[in-house]
Length: 247
Image (cartoon, rainbow, N blue to C red; front, side, top):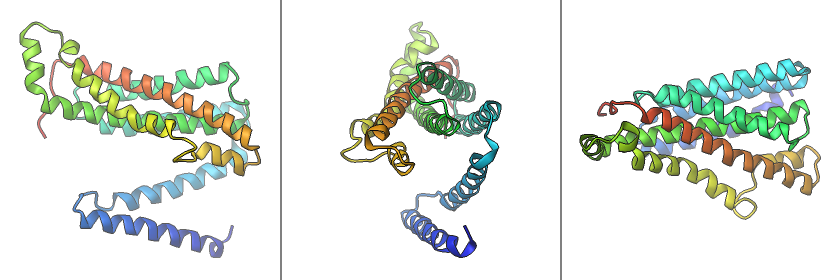
């Protein structure tokens, strides 16, 4: 693809992201240039992935290495978002890695997707991305709940409750809120949304039935991966004897 062919695409992306930045600034949200930075990183990273998928990932060791790279990147991102919690970084990393690897292991062991390089990478990328998002949402919500519910936690502790017992209700709320967006999208698939895996499989030449089968595997995988990530991550964070520092 030449620069002339890429120009309309890049211009369109620039318009979309620029409009988002303007709207957020008018609303005084305070994200600054983060949307622009995010899309630039996405462009660079997707270009590298496209190059890798065109020829570099031609052996299972290279696929494993690429999955390890995705896990590392997702873990670092989640770790940064969980720093408000005393044990948040450890919980975030453990949740992402365990949630993704357990889910991928079950999918591959049961033969739910063909063991082709492209399909394994596709499922791994979707699952790891969801684990990262769920980890970030659950940890940030847990930290916010602990700040607003500090009195409740201290009351439980004064009665002799253990740290995890004292934050149980707040932790459960954090898990629920982190999983609801994905569950809502799952139950409305086909009516409100056409997920990327389904559309991508269609564009790749699969029949609508094959695309639907692949999408169902992905959706079920995301339910399990999200549950493991949120439950394990917040479980580790809940073991701390310290509350997050006030904002």
